[in-house]
Amino acid sequence: MAFANESIPAWWWADRSGAEVSKSVATSSRMKNVVSGTCGGITLVAMGHPFDTIKVKLQCQSMMTNPGRLPLYTSAMDCLRKTTAMEGFNGLYKGVASPLAGQMLFNACLFMTHDEIKLSLVERNGGAALSTAQKFQAGAMTGAVVSLIESPTDLFKSKMQLQSAGNSTTQYASTLECAKAIVGKAGIRGMYQGLGGTVLRNTLSNGLFFGIYDVTRSRLEVDGQRTTSSLFSAGATAGFACTICAYPFDVVKSSLQADSLHKYQRNYRGVIDCATKIYARQGWRAFTQGLGPSLIRGAPGGGLLVVTVETVRSMIGDLM
Image 1 (cartoon, rainbow, N blue to C red):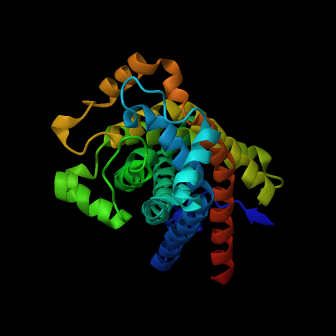
Image 2: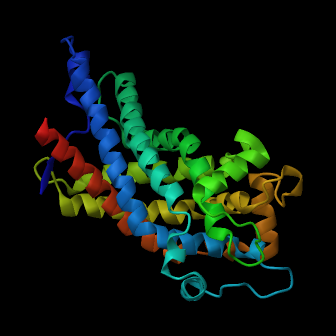
Image 3: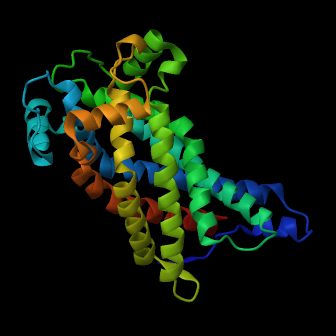
């Protein structure tokens, strides 16, 4: 299947050339981003949530294990075996409701925001195409903005995933109950526990993902056409690279979110304090715990995400 190159929507060029722009055309372009991003989010969660569960448990196991005791999990495979033995296969999808709803909203906003930021940068260029640096800049700006949406859903997911690990005793029957409990104990601000870590991770991760994806996709195009294989390859390459580079920030983010809901009972005062204490306790290897399952999720997940998004965009375009 081939996809036409639609980096800059036609309605934007029409507007800047002085022609009358139909608001319905602009709206339909944004609707494509919302619908395709939503479908991409569903695909990503369905494929990647079990790997994310293992990743989060490995990242945060030092907080879930009593001092002086051996780590609960010795490897990703050990974590997989123990999780399925204690909780069944469904344990790998614990907390899935939050990222499912969150990723649907997150990816809808992600691709719409990314397009709007790219258009703004093109306008600043006087209509000239984005430079490579600006492609990375657009992704980074997008990551910072959408962190406000992702941070709460990521927090609910993490709390659900970790509640049966080690010595954690707080139990939530559902993601909704978890959200209500967090808001009840810490208010609306409690939903944004670890926001600093989320912003840092997303700014770097999305800057790399969209920058590498745009550059790689352009180089893989044949006569201005994108094939399914070229889209998947570009998305997988971007997913692999951004996962590796942003992973230490992801470890810090997960640790901040796994901390106590009560401000004065927390182990970490912020991003820098968290990173410093993790390094002091476990060394640099702590920032790679769970990287294996995260890469398994990140590379094919990135490919599946962009293929789903572009396929749905193309289908909507055919219907219209």
